[in-house]
Image 1 (spheres, rainbow, N blue to C red):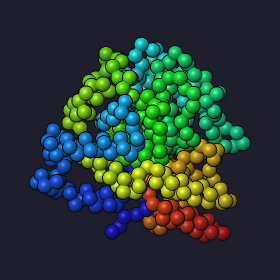
Image 2: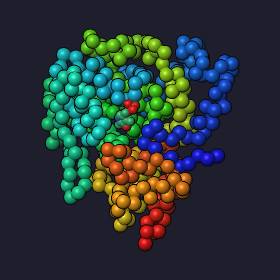
Image 3: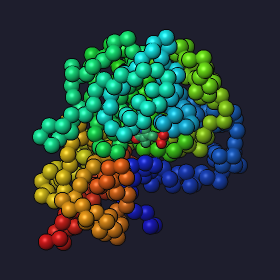
Image 4: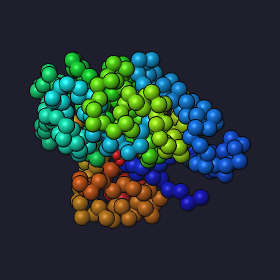
Length: 361
Ligand SMILES: *Cc1c(COP(=O)(O)O)cnc(C)c1O
């Protein structure tokens, strides 16, 4: 039906079955005689659906009762400003780990509201990039929180686990790793993620916030950006992005059918391993991230000869593989292997990479 193997970093590929359900319900949702885009967000049908989405997210991520699940518009980028507005309280500083482009954007935004202590950055040793151990971080103990980007979508660098021994609320941007593996939510103050990578489409952003962090928002915080007010208003202070909320619901149903986060994480592990193993064993393709910090969601790689990049991408498209071009700030290639990408797509990609290399000889 003309659909190609899509390795887009975001908005990313959706499972075909989810798109088909959306298609089949498009004209008449739940017997309402109208699409889900055309009914009130206050209608009983939509309110019930929305509450189920939250409940399913709670179940899939095992979110404890002392956390609120909120949905915002504005993308993950708007959270870069909402976090300091909501969480700084009477503190004057915040800690940020800088692991790449998304960290840097978060740092820049936070700098408008307080003093940002960049407590750690990437280190390079024997040509490989890695995230240094927490023991070496220069943490400001008076700061309101410590923020990190769990998975740097652009450079393919990820944390291998939750940083240990941080004695302040831990805040994580999980836009490109949420729901890809089990997560101990109780370790966090706030987790946030835009939906369009691993939990739906653009227009919805999830914020999971611990109850004790509500109520300290800066007075200048707009109501629609205020975590406490949004929690009290069930994330419906104004018209939410209803279709995006609906798509997240369908995606979470799909994830449950796959066996949930634990099951999908094993497949994700296999997918990434297959591709990294192939790259490591090749004399033509390379990846410069230390194995422990390699992203399972965004596999970034370079060709031995970058003048062949355009040919690689063009022939990939002919072979039915799209969106492999690395981010413009980095160049090279990137294959995003989010939950919706089946193992078979990774095998097709590896096969294409092999053939491309063979044809050079
Ligand atoms: C995509 C992405 C963002 C930005 O998301 P928007 O919804 O476009 O604002 C932020 N952080 C990470 C890690 C991302 O991958």
